[in-house]
Image (cartoon, rainbow, N blue to C red):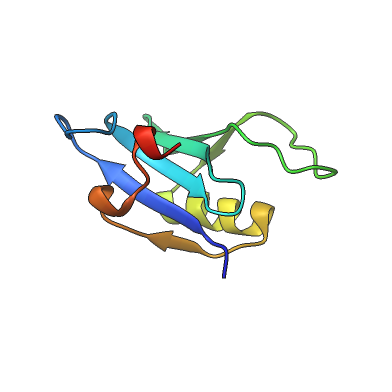
Length: 93
């Protein structure tokens, strides 16, 4: 079953850039990222779904869980947490 992988990458990972990343297994691409700001979380969508326009490429959420829920609803796929080492590496793309 196709899903969206989510991981949080800490500093100095051997292959991935620090951040919070979402990877669409069906499209085999990083589809979004999120980061924390003062009032909550900002989600940036990189891979817009065909025939499902977004109001903005950057969306705000109060919590990380709300951002994950949006990604799941938008792509109509479950978001599954994974370890950074289980996330596809740049070389795999």
